[in-house]
Length: 108
Image (tube, rainbow, N blue to C red):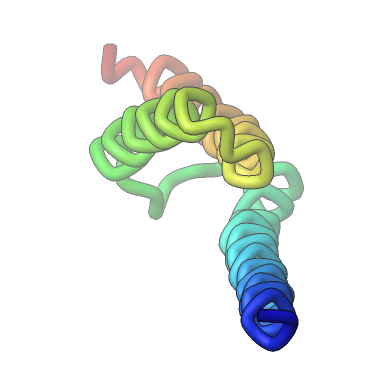
């Protein structure tokens, strides 16, 4: 009987280690995906131009981020929610700059 308890504990420890690896994988993926937006934000800040950026893409992407954030909140995936919020802030900045550029050009 002792062997069965030890096997169960060993299996649970293995599952916990696997879940830690899965969580780490998710956090690294979220970090890299969020970090990917930083060069674009820096470029827009420096040049004050969004000329080559698609407004439609950023609107759709922003809506997707909002839905991902709601989903993360509902399932209590806090790391995912954090990355979505940070990415959302960067995306929102670029979107605002894009719309401002359209206004400056008299396109609205």
